[in-house]
Image 1: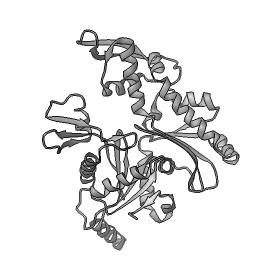
Image 2: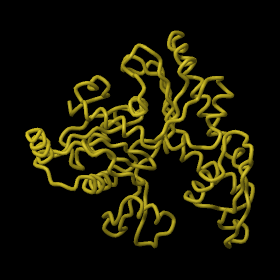
Image 3: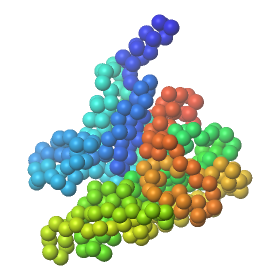
Image 4: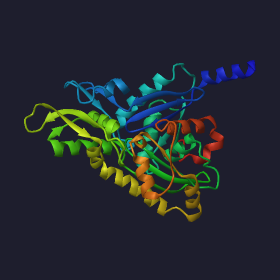
Length: 349
């Protein structure tokens, strides 16, 4: 027992391996042997003069839309991939440093979750950014497979497991069997597009300009995809586009349902397309097992009810929709030899 403790302690001194869900809106980090240690917005505040980072995560997100000329707050991830290579590198270095308290002799081995529709160029950008941020080896795993493992689905069995993961920048839909993706759709329509739809709707209907953070708050509080038993409402503050002064309007879940109709419809259509491409034998498994929903976007009120109405399939919510992707990557990290065949790419070739 004592030998095992000393061995584990020595291993931690040598290196601390981690898994990262590098999301458009949120970054989560799992440290081997510790679990999830970081859950922060993917936002960086930079000094405009030096271009150096000032703060990361929650503090930086609070600055969005509120900074003076000398500071800019940016989201360096867009549509699930890197939009600003240098800023992502700074952000990752800060998050990794915050996650690993103890200095190790070796750089960490890192698993990164990426969209299943990622291109070779985007894949290389992720790998390079993570390497420059301090990784020894970089492994990539597709988000739907990682989410499925995090949910606890038997991905290695010869049976159909369907998951829909709605993040900030992408919606990942996949049918998985025998450790591989049989049919899938990866669309760049997700939480951010929903926020944009709300901004445009309120601008068009009320001549009111609101910020992205306000739109996100509206989406969380009264956004819906399907009729609710009790429709809700809230006050929204912004700038009157006619008079140029601050103004408050009242809106409700019915209006937000109209605002969100287009992005939600695109997600439902992508889901139907994936089902159409699914072999009959696996489709029958999905009828029995249902569709699992993960990601922050899956929390939109009534989305599961809408998908059920459109597909006539059982929709299952998961306990930790925001965390299941990084939890799955953590399970892969804890047993790399078992899950190695699930990795999209390992190390630099």
